[in-house]
Amino acid sequence: MPVVKSVYNPSLFLKNGHFSTIYSGLFRKVNGVAQQRERLELPDGDFLDMDWSYTDNHSKRLVILLHGLEGDAQRPYITGSAKIFNQNGFDACAVNFRGCSGEPNRLYRSYHSGATEDLDAVVQYILNERDYSEIYVKGFSLGGNLALKYLGENDNIPQQIKGAVAVSVPCDLHSSLRALLRPKNYLYAQRFKKHLLAKLRIKQRLFPKRITKNDIKRIETLKDFDDVYTSKAHGFANAMDYYTKSSCLQFLPRIQTPTLIINAENDSFLGEECYPVEEAEQNSFIYLEMPKYGGHVGFFDKQSTTYTEKRAINFIQDVL
Image (tube, rainbow, N blue to C red; front, side):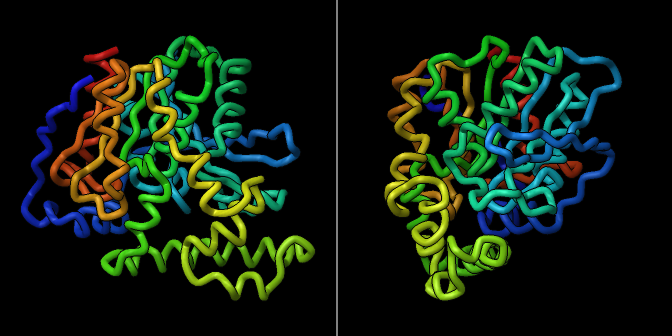
């Protein structure tokens, strides 16, 4: 589909991409979402936790929510999405990736941008154990890349999956890494690295034969983290091999599920290759919206909602 024109026009201070990113991430509050946790045992002996919230009635429609790097199902962008979907007749299953629910996962591996086997495990569980006739997927940042890769790499998407929305997507992971390593993003990169290293130190104590303290000391950048841990723990040769194989960009031409991608032009986490204009123009199932403003998973709007939350509902109602 052609690129979709955006109408998002926030207040003056939120037109700054950094303000939008930080305000929505650190200061936004979402109330009124009651979540119930359920643990899903995975085929490899590990687990992940799903936080469910429900409509007042028994709904046949469900949205699966996928968080970003070092996020969880309690982040405002997840609970805000769950809330608006619940208000519009959808149940919500907010997935905590491995090691992101407040408890270390059991295995040396954890989660990463291309781990679609975990999303597939969630989908298969829902299809087998729950009674939903319509399922939608909404992912943010890393979770958006995961959702798009899942839709594009799989020739047998379940017929119950009717559509998807992906927000602030690093469609090309190496391009996004280069953007994050720019000086203007130093504080963001350091924050991510701090949280990732804290988890890796726990892994080192649990699996001292897999990684040493000296290995961790060698990690200075996010790319180093992916070279030392992410790639090795998940079967990739190195960080570049991980970025190449896990980026969703290469899978977009094969998507046959109506999909909305919303990437702000002032998202400092995204490089030029993360705006898939050509892919959208050549695939009638993809709708690409590039608001001038919004930052990274920002898009704050009125009454503690975001533009992308309301846009997701409208997309499902109008297009599907």
